[in-house]
Length: 246
Ligand code: URA
Image 1 (cartoon, rainbow, N blue to C red):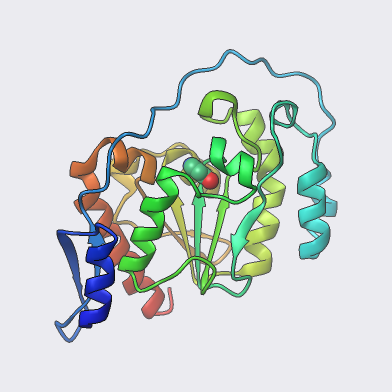
Image 2: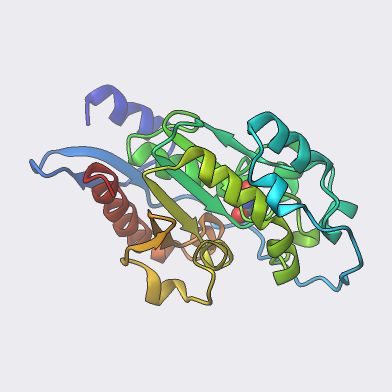
């Protein structure tokens, strides 16, 4: 890491630094281990499922980006449409090698229409910086559900199922070199089965011929900063996979 980059990271409060060594043993990236841990835990919500027309999965599977995003914005396939300000399709490089998938938009994302722009998003941006990456360049960020679950509760199975065709289409259009699930709900949607992050981290899964890894959600890391070291190990694993072609 050059002096300028190191100074920028320090300026942003990203110290002390976790250092990522490349195969030659030189330090080339760093991540904050001291980000604040004030993100509120998601709270349970009592909202009930009601009847909504479901998304036409076979049609979605043929859409181009424009039609896909318009369809997401207009979607009323589950109850999450009722309280959203707007749907949040995803953001980034449509030819990205790296695709990060979170759980669902929070309040700030619902307001701004972009994923991971709140506190958890700031930590995700730091994680990207540590990998030498930048939002929008070789990185695409999306969520398992595109509309904010009220009170930031975990999306219900019916909601992730209703939104799955959209994520499937985003993945099919991008075909990234690596899919990174941030947290358990995203991992379960990507892998189609129950998993625990503790047991699944460090493993290479596959989905439609694309490698998938799982790591902690940034919001979890804000509440449990001692686990940032494990997340950093996961990112180093991720980088090896991308460099080795998956
Ligand atoms: N948490 C998520 O899972 N996604 C976002 O976009 C923001 C917070």
